[in-house]
Image (cartoon, rainbow, N blue to C red):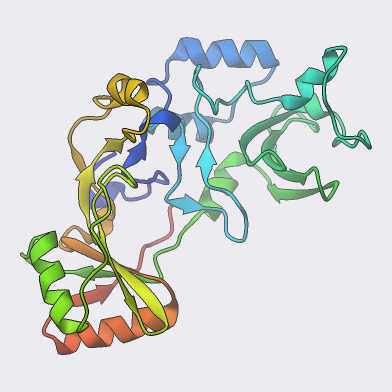
Length: 284
């Protein structure tokens, strides 16, 4: 995860949620999964997992529930282990009452799911997988992309309702300015471990805005489970930019909808802030 704008094609969310991150990917781990499943993983997927071995995405598949790409390793969620239908081999396994499954389910390798739908590497037609979506409740499947490289190129950042502030003000000093500009105080400051960074929120007429930092810790874990926190808190030391394409924007204004974005942009501009829309280029 680099601060270099030239390497801004990363799909991964910053900061990384450490419980969803596997250990650094090794050739041995790749070989073990491929041998056990009898497949060869796509080179495009391996390249992304070498950059970061699984986790939440900044760029996601439009009009879908896609939020993650699973890494390879022992921690859930893990590519190669999340086959609930493998339980069909067990005598008392649970499965849908009507018994529906896509054809040849063991040739489908999930890499994201909410338990009702699955995005999969689809090896049913050969050794080079396409990407397929299927929904257990709808009992339907749909082709998504001809291969993993095409799938990754389809992912999009959703930055249309975010503004960048070019400012030397700290988060708290800027929040004080916002209290005056919007003629109301912010809500109480949210804890840093909710999303991995602090933020303040204002409820305005017709929507809300959040003031957030651009530079944040590279990884975070909630203190809700102290044992997990202690085990993972040092996993990714240092800081990184959430929006490396906008390295001059010290602060981010996240707006609840497009109308609020336009009104907030105009209000902050009138108040003398150097503000711009975040226009994130597509990954290449």
